[in-house]
Length: 213
Image (tube, rainbow, N blue to C red; front, top):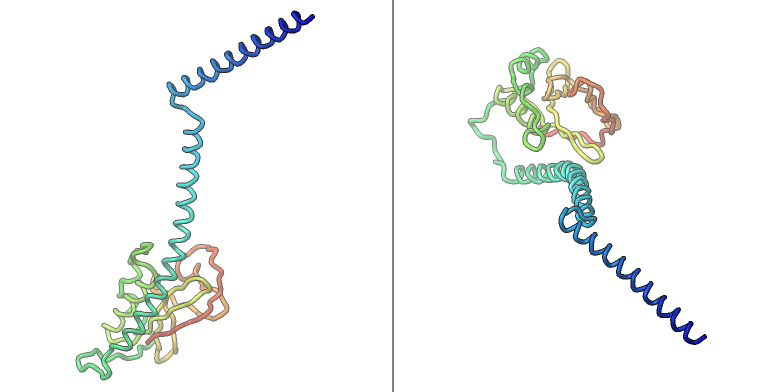
């Protein structure tokens, strides 16, 4: 009996050894195949990671850039305006153009000849603030008194130009289209009418209207 038991154990060990050997050969074949084809699971994981990273980075960068740009631009403009007030001459300069409030007709004639509205909107280079500044400067160069108007929303801002006409009072002009707009705190800006000419999803209410003469 003892001999049969030992013989059985020996057979079992031989079978186990064969199984381990076969598994080792299979694993070795897989490694050789992977090495020759270059298509590994690790490479697929790395590729998936890279794709996910690139896509996530692009999405978060674009969204973050717009938010950061708007906030930085607003803070920079406010600070620049404050510094400008501090260093501006305390007395009127003799060579300065004398400005006047226009009639509504004079304003319309000026806008018809001014080319600011034909400029292209270029994200990050020439935006609403630039349109407003250029129209304001052009008006004053023609002797027309104008105001730079900053419109604050909850998380961003816009800019237009205001004119105090002698016959129709205060008029706000969207410099990207030369259209008159009505500004009311607590209500959204009329993007469809004033800028885009099409339906938009911009419905955020105006928080503050700042008029800078």
